[in-house]
Length: 170
Image (cartoon, rainbow, N blue to C red):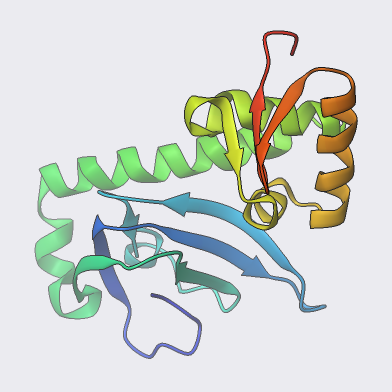
């Protein structure tokens, strides 16, 4: 979808599918920044700020996007108040999400339970690897926490890599 090696800055609107956005640190580790689905914007920062050399957007599944060159359309985009309003909402949402992720450090157990409650459909975590990436921990750490939570009756295991919150949580 987007990488530092891409020459042309594109504004992209996700029509269908989902993607993961991450930052690659100098030591090569990946840090999850966001994930998006339908109506998610890519390139909104590129309209106002030089492209970062370490941010990648990667399709998580089959993806359909509408895209166009920022450079070729910049003047038109910046003169359209409705477009700028959409960009402001998009950027504010992204900043809010990142602020919330970093604002109140909590234990990994608390983060896992909050993630399941507020970010997982039907309070059900599906896929330990992807959830670990989003929670900024290893899959092994997450599995250990899920096993402890299952023993404590906070979650129930539904199948391989699938856990649901019980009524005993938080």
